[in-house]
Image 1: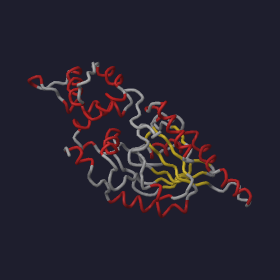
Image 2: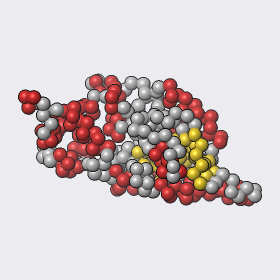
Image 3: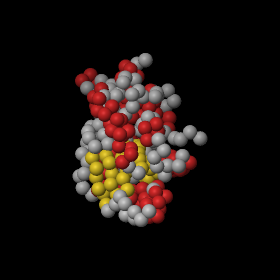
Amino acid sequence: MNAMEEQLNIQWFPGHMTKARRMIGENLKLVDAICEILDARIPLSSRNPDLDALVGEKPRLVILNRADQADPAVTRLWTEEYARMGMPALLTDCKSGKGVNRFPVALRGLLREKIARYAEKGQTGRPLRAMIVGIPNVGKSSFINRIAGRKAAEASDRPGVTRGKQWIKIEQGLELLDTPGILWPRFESRAVGERLAFTGAVRDQILDREALAARLLECLRDAYPAAISERYKLEIKPEDTGRSLLETAARKRGFLLSGGVCDLERMAVILLDEFRGGKLGRISLERPEV
């Protein structure tokens, strides 16, 4: 096991995440639905596998955030997969606000049977309440601020900044419960940990960024070779490793130290920032199992 594998295999379950998990369980009875925000580029890895057991049979809406950065053909496969699971999916981009305004309609569609039962009981207009859940840095607070039209939830690039329970009224008859971002006790596999690290859900400060960037280049070499060859002016050869591609990209960018040594740390930071910012194109790192 190399150093990065060891880093990605440690227990990522700090105290505030234990509290978040408990809070979700305690507040389930207060809400009508669960809205789970996922990263559209890694819908599988950005799902908390504990959530199914935590929320039980509550109606669930999947929000695929950062959809504008994901491969649209792959995202279409994911929406079909969620539909088969009985969970409608809403595509959003919280930075631009695209798709966010369709959320109230999607939520009311999910809860149409409950709304009809309320109407039969003469409770038309009874508020609908939904809990917003998601792993750190997936765009939860940004989504809430967009839908509320104001800074209703604290947002940050730092994973896990949302700390306590917050009720946000987004329009007449619709309220959201924000929860702290929650990871899980142990990543299921090395690949899950890597993909979370690629997208910034795990703090870079505790990882070997050169190794992480090299591994990302290997993934892109296999799935989206044109993305890196065009962005970094690389000619990809069959024998190229992630590290050799990182070195070539550093030379192409002129990131050199004294003696002509490649500044791999600088190139790694640039690569990760550009991937996370969508500058390599629309990329999905996971596909549903067929």
